[in-house]
Amino acid sequence: MMKHSTLKSFYVYPFLVLLYPLVVTATPKPQYKNYSFPAVIAFGDSILDTGNNNYIETIVKANFKPYGRDFIGGKATGRFSNGRIPSDIFVEMLGIKDSMPPYLDPNLKIEDLLTGVCFASAGSGYDPLTIELASVLSTEDQLEMFKEYIGKLKEAVGENRTADIIAKSIHIISMGSNDVSGTYYLSPYRKHDYNIEIYTSLLVTAASKFVKDLYELGARRIGVFSLGPVGCVPLQRTVEGGLERDCVGKVNEGALIYNNKLLSSVVDLRKTLPDSRLVYLENYSELDDIIQNHNHYGFEVGDGSCCGIANVELGPLCSSFTLRVCEDTSKYVFWDSYHPTERAYKMLVTEVLKNRIDEFV
Image 1: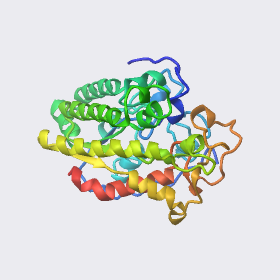
Image 2: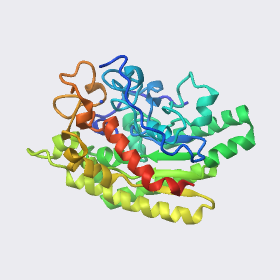
Image 3: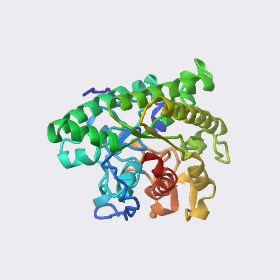
Image 4: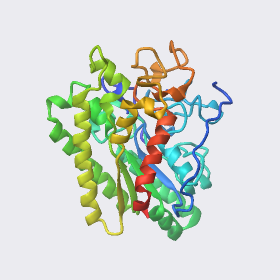
């Protein structure tokens, strides 16, 4: 397994794309347990990473309080939220298990492997520079781990059953937000080399290759998340939103340019990969609506974070030493300056599954 050095640049980390012991959060009911998906397998960044970064040499971690304060047992597991994240909510709502373990957890059992694990790495992206600056797992690293995982399944249950599990399971990918919001718009690097049209095309080309690589390894049901309105996260509002802390239009525009190209890529891949069930998981409009109309959804704060006082805190800056952590997380759309709360994530995953679950069948 590849090891990584410490963070090389301040520019990317803030965007790597949050009452303590014995607090157990309510879990979503398994609404789709009658669907015959044996497992959910996750790839990508902090939206899906359930703790792989705990086991590599990077400071992009969330395995300390107050992260996880609403997770089972109030434990900080490396998830960038107060509780569960989309990978967990997926397996819970499908009736597979309560949460998704990280693949690098040394205590994994065969039962964990059979029902799905997470290969995502917080801070990851398609741009090699994003990986270099953050010292996290690349798409190549995640694919190598997936190959190793397939080998372990074959040893445990045989080649035929392994192929069946891989083909029938849902594979979800969330990647690109760190590239667009961090490496391109925040850092002084890529925007001087490419305009946003060219840069997003490069990202989508890499995304398409990643999907094809998964397909070649036997995956057939693959869901690709769009980017959310990353210009509306608290950190972006604070850094570039002016005195009113408005959403940063150019960053949201970059996300939408990427999303449009990603959708076209998914449509094209469906035509060229036989027996595939490739699904574009749109969540930009839903999260944007939650942020802009947060009161309608029962939130009191849509532009600030629960953890911290300056709305720039995440990772090490959101720790037990922070000057403020809100008392009631359910009132906030965002846990830290970049990542939603579990409650907001549940709303997003509920909407995604309601609209797209049948496309995986």
